[in-house]
Image 1 (spheres, rainbow, N blue to C red):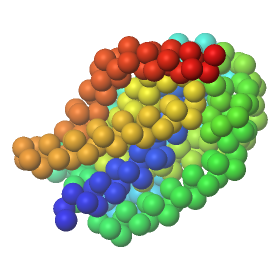
Image 2: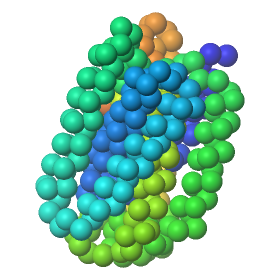
Image 3: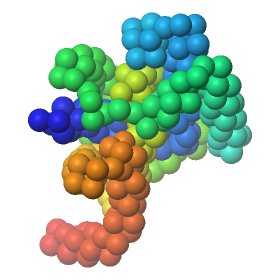
Length: 287
């Protein structure tokens, strides 16, 4: 009864975050999700300093506003051709946002406890009502991404291909100078997803679910649809094991899930020879 709502929320995050994670990997802005999550946490910290409930609607509004501002900056990063420069800027945003959050919350006697909550989350105590609201919002965003998938593919990969995502090859940063407006819409949707998730799951788990399953899947599969499917499978497996382990060993849920998800790339590397054999056997059968 306790774990089921947390599992339902994890499934919702896996569905949306894995798709977004594949696009982030293709865009060459790997840590943009971590920076956005920390900026959203900074907004919530500011609301807490001003006397609002750290988990109330006002804090959510502050977090969303901060994440939207960061999303505008992320959309502008496409004008910078050098990937290293992009990552340096994103890293600076993350570090400064983290430092400001610590400074703000240090002004309160319970601020450090709130900072710990923002990092680790409190997914174990999510309510079904919150799961329903997040599910409804995520459904709208998924529908929008499906409708705009070809344009998003051009912006992220520089070309369009059949399937859910284009071929899983990293395009040059300037391969496609897509519309700033469409790029901004993508990062605004990204900001919505991040803001809703950070309030409950915490910065660490949000980042882990965005990047680790998607990256692990890229180690095993070459086609976009298969990468997405494997990302879903790996993310679900890691989340279930993490939730069970936190319950069985009485460990913090969010950080335990992150630790288990961190093993997925190692699992993917171990399975790569098997994936190669399956691919070779399939090629022989087709020939």
